[in-house]
Amino acid sequence: MGLPVLCGRVAGDLKSGLRRLVDTYKLEVRVTPNQDLLLCNIGASQRSSIRAELAAIGFETPEAPPLLARHAIACPALPLCGLAVTEAERGLPAVLDRLDALLNRLGINRSVLVRMTGCPNGCARPYMAEIGLVGSGVDQYQLWLGGTPNLSRLAEPYLEKMPLEQLESTLEPLLRAWHEAGGRRSFGDFVLKCGRDRTLELLQGA
Image (cartoon, rainbow, N blue to C red; front, side, top):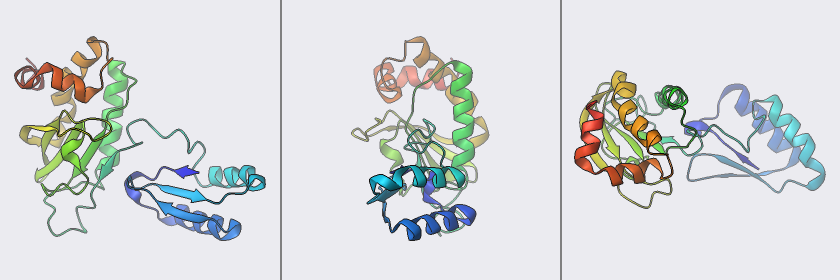
């Protein structure tokens, strides 16, 4: 059973609850490249009781995590990394909430691959994301666009220092154009089809 764990952080009641569950049922735990957890070697007779105990500690529907959070990753950044110039892991939940609210307001029910790092070293692989936020100053980020959901194409840098407070106002015209185009392509493919000049115009609200 896969357990989505945003940013790979397990602490407090969640940590103690998982520890109790693993000890009780003698489960094997694996960590995925997306910072999530896999509980392995679950017996057929254990499934219902394990699902009930997971629901009690917050995993009511582990098979259906929020669309944006499903594959989003951030590097640890501040205060753990001496190279970080701004937030990433601690800021990602709020960024995803803001993007989710924007997508809902625009009527978009599609996933977008988001990656966020606190410096240009790119430890969370933002340079292949559909929306990559790369720290370039305090609460400022390079904006990379045009990657793919399966990380098979490099994104391109579009803005060098986007204040995080301008996240919605910057991306809304581009996301709206994607939605109006029918949303058949992934967001990254739509950016690629638009081309650099048109994408920059949309980011600037033109």
